[in-house]
Length: 331
Image (cartoon, rainbow, N blue to C red; front, top):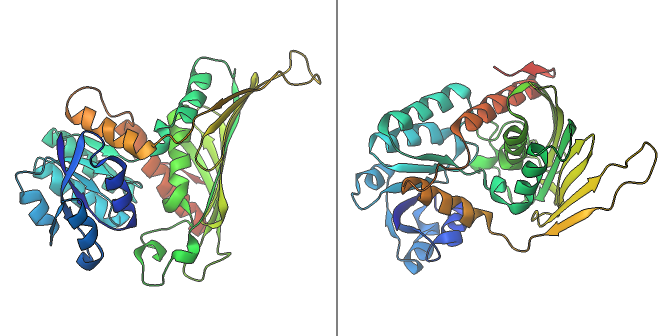
């Protein structure tokens, strides 16, 4: 059992705890958050000791690992401090907001010999793994393009004083909230990104940009498109177009995968679609269980740190493109 601290016991931190606490190999024993009053009842019911600062978490010998559900700009320093304290680290996405900060945090974890995992939970869903299988086994043939559309209706819950509305914490519209998930899945499939062009808009909230569109060119020549917004009905679509067919994930919970074979000859009807339904798969439980397995030495965490770093560098280019209004090459 991996004895773990939850750092940031807000809405998302509590969601992470409840995904596995008492159900798997991660046991949360300590919690720390900025607003103690909002976490006291939650922690008390789950027998989680609440402490006042991060230093107390890292000094606790009973804590083997930390889960960071904190503002994005704090991740780099928190990872470095946890690594120095010999704690394994699970960090929520986005990992950091700049490539330099990501490189520093990753180097600290490697130097300390601790596991560092980043919470890109959508990679774990069976539907996404079906897409990856069809890309890698050649069933799609040469890939033409990849499209990802992800929306949620969360902007009405934002407040003017909340960190999620700060342009320093959440630049490029909906990218930090949801867009980085789609970007990560694309990088997992098609590798390094060469260039991006981003446009953002403020459509339904006065606090911050809420809608984002990104054109992507991968180093291998595949093109991509990300659309994300936190001001519409919940919707999810991830499609990979190949010369032999289309692989698609639909439904907000990713439960439906469809493969549509291309016709044997031009202008003929498509082949019979293959549909695979996966009901109620818990991606948060899966990623935290994989983190525990990585700490135990059973298997490496399935999200490589090279992919994480590429994602941060691409995100940094997306932010720059949104500000400058032009295509930007990824460093």
